[in-house]
Length: 214
Image (cartoon, rainbow, N blue to C red; front, side, top):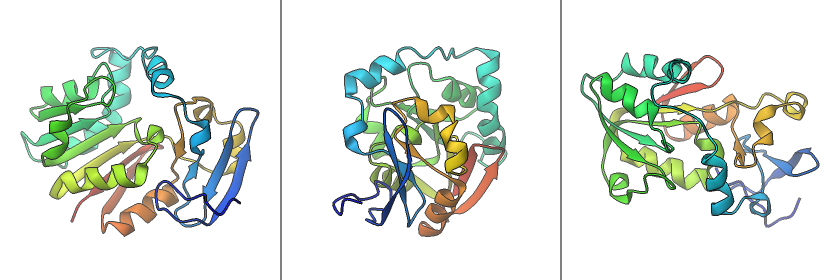
């Protein structure tokens, strides 16, 4: 591979080909197991926002709330009553934050396109959620590190993202066909990240991770 390539999560340069389709090439980091595309395959900010504007995630849609409850249920069992939280990458309809507010949490919102309130990124929180967000990050290493810094000791980072299994499954995987998705995590990647940050990792179902800060 090109020696100038580096992993956007761990910055290592030992990169192997993973999969290629008609539109994009996907690479594998041999250190942290992240699968990713290179910047030449990123959408422009305008193209990216146009895709998000098509999303139909209504705040009070029961089906969508059921989907999000796979993260909120275990999270609420672990955080104190009235905990302060940040919904990072909340999108235009912050259903998750609404659900957590209804459960008594004190929520702040951030989304680079829809709630670009930089001041909330300077505060500390007892928990941070990022549902269907990390796969969109162009600089996941620095962005996840910044969120981790915002967490208070004993706090939780709640992640929801579909996980890479192997190249064979990846070939038929719908998740890669969304061109706003540029980073693909596996369970191995999250275990690497948890060890790096001395975090306690719990996985729930196919796509929910809770990471507790020591």
